[in-house]
View 1 (cartoon, rainbow, N blue to C red):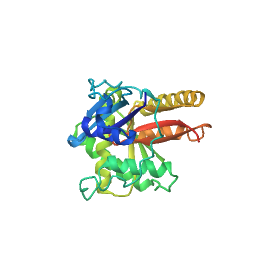
View 2 (cartoon, rainbow, N blue to C red; view 1 turned 30 degrees about the horizontal axis):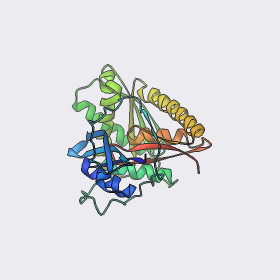
View 3 (tube, helix red, strand yellow; view 1 turned 180 degrees about the vertical axis):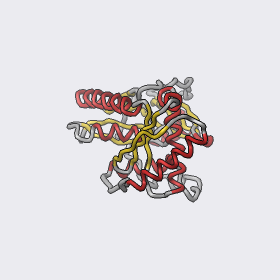
View 4 (cartoon, rainbow, N blue to C red; view 1 turned 120 degrees about the vertical axis):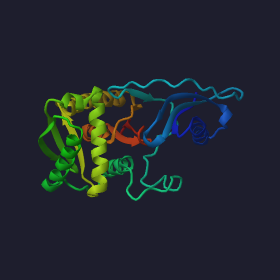
Length: 277
């Protein structure tokens, strides 16, 4: 049975997209909702599995959304897909999108940065001055929250300034599965993008959470890559933020026999690990 996984802003839009891609009528599909989320600023996104009904046309069946595993990035094998999804191209949705504000959202910037890195484009490199600006910004936010957290140190990695936090309240700042830390990092980069507009981004860490998370993602990437290589089938990971998708791409950049790319829209953008052509 031919099937495909695809996303849309609603179940109806996703079903319509699936029908167009598979070349069948919408009522020739059985549809299962795999994930339905509402992102920031009210933006919704639905991911479905659409299967072509081999017999007479039937009414599409929509099942209840399946809860996604919170940690760490589960693997969803992509089987019986007619064609490999094309990599999203920068600006490919410009005609359908609403007018953008003067400063683009961090999600859009993150996708563009990721695509540029995948294409090998030259990216800006962080400097000591960039680090000092971001440190001051983080201190402002921590002081306004009355948290006993200090900046322990900084380092550079391409366009990223890695800021390590320490202090009595750092455990509360990390939160469960890094949710609070990710939210703070998101806000820091939103403000930095508008205030400095230099393409430099911050990553925040506390209690070595990022290091431990990076190790877990690296192990996941290599394990899945081995399965993809042996089975000859693509695998798609659960949605990850841009800086964690970057870890997956980097981990497998020199892994023979596989290639990686990203598909979908934020906040449901995913890394696909596929056999090398």
